[in-house]
Length: 222
Ligand code: C5P
Figure 1 (cartoon, helix red, strand yellow):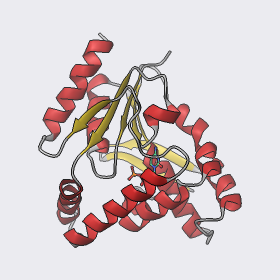
Figure 2 (figure 1 turned 180 degrees about the horizontal axis):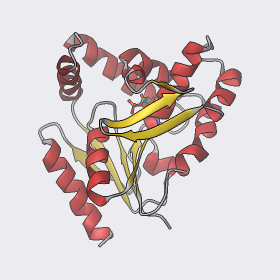
Figure 3 (figure 1 turned 90 degrees about the horizontal axis):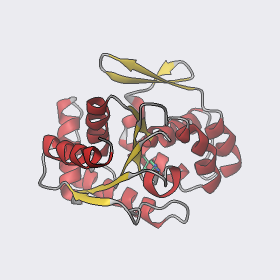
């Protein structure tokens, strides 16, 4: 069986950065499952499909025309041939993604696509339900959190570095609203798998968290 490490947790906990570092260090593949929900939300917006229209959103999610392409600046994501790597990261698309992610048929439509990412020599999968639903057989599951304020501050810094202005209180409010929506939905809500290792990264740096996950991985996959 292909080895899988799952990294779940709320928005902005650092899952993306850590998953990337861990995958690079091990030479494994990476799945950013949130990008699939973001792409579905973006495609729905382009096609003028309502975010509660499960009948129309399900085939849209199942047939997403998307290419993940490695580039020198990280992964390039093409939707219908157009580079949307930046566009899908907008806060607005994050909120929309959280809405479409609450629809059971949309989640089911994306399940096989996510499982297909498990390829040799291994996969690091980042999301909300990687350890509970998509890869329940994973031998290493991490649930990563940080306080809402710390998560919003990290996001604020990222946006500033890109020259995008933002309001910190608005970011805190957005994160809390998205966590609430993700935690309270009926299918695959955001919750730690019973066998997950819990990591609160509020006061931890990127290197420290990466090293901690790699240390756990070494115990299992030596
Ligand atoms: O991780 P990211 O912020 O990119 O995810 C965007 C949204 O997609 C989340 O707020 C969540 O609603 C949804 N999502 C999910 N299950 C996953 C990954 C993301 O429901 N495995």
